[in-house]
View 1 (cartoon, rainbow, N blue to C red):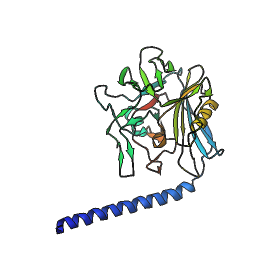
View 2 (cartoon, rainbow, N blue to C red):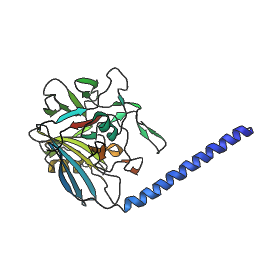
View 3 (cartoon, rainbow, N blue to C red):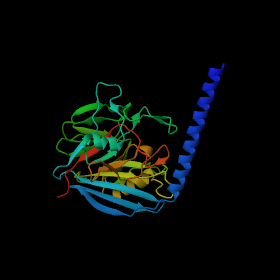
View 4 (cartoon, helix red, strand yellow):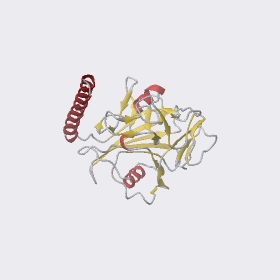
Length: 298
């Protein structure tokens, strides 16, 4: 090995050691902060016309901070929107954080959507996708009448017609907006069998009430001991039923789980505490999103 190669190798080793040290410091500071966080207070407030937010804080069977948004699909000005994609592309979407989605399309409410590929998350320096990189959603997806992902695995799907009529697994009319999950959680207000074996995790879910009038968006914070440890799928189903859900499906969770609304200055306000790369508050760039347009309160 010549001198130049030796110098390069030493430089790479030094950079790697510095990166590891920085990551360790972030982890130590983040861990200390995490265990000292104070639980937020439960709250219930109207955010926009036809849009209500509930923060449900529980300490049993473990600490859980639950975020619920109820959208009246019959309210004036309410309109549902799914991230648009390119049906001609092998990877039809560009990854975005939920805040970037809200800011890019000027929606008032947004949550992360279904699973996507390719994806990996090894460290803060080694993950995919970054914002702007291409991905494909796993389930059926459509935006404003354009279908850009076919349902090859028969995932559960929420269909929202142009007139806001919504239903799971069967469109009410011509397909307008559609987004998929990975399994159904509730049917006729009851949790489905087989949900008991899951571990507590951050979760995202969407639901409809019995009359299909209210769209219910749920995010549970998790992987944050001392603050919110997450919910099992069984608990998630029971939480949704408690808040009026009749039919519900699980969406992409874990580090993807994020709920964002338009803040007072028109920019994104993150309601929950997402956790990506083990860093609380860090949003993950994901595939598609479910957004809500709504009018300001009168």
